[in-house]
Length: 79
Image: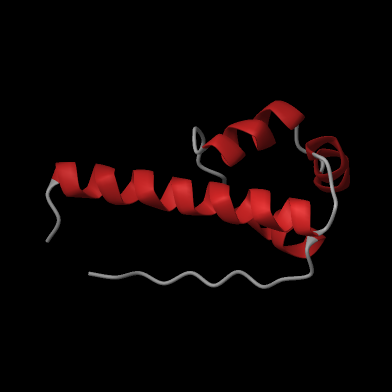
């Protein structure tokens, strides 16, 4: 079982991984943050925070992002 410090570090790493993937996907699709924001209906400031690893997306937002890039969400839980 993870202690609180390990859990915080794992969450931080997950946010940074998501940030890198989101930025890469957006650039690969030649989209600006404004383009993606308009397409999925969330504020640009929120997407900027996601790309900087400063925010955690709700599952609904992850679903909207996945649809924008024609992808599926793959979530796994590890003990």
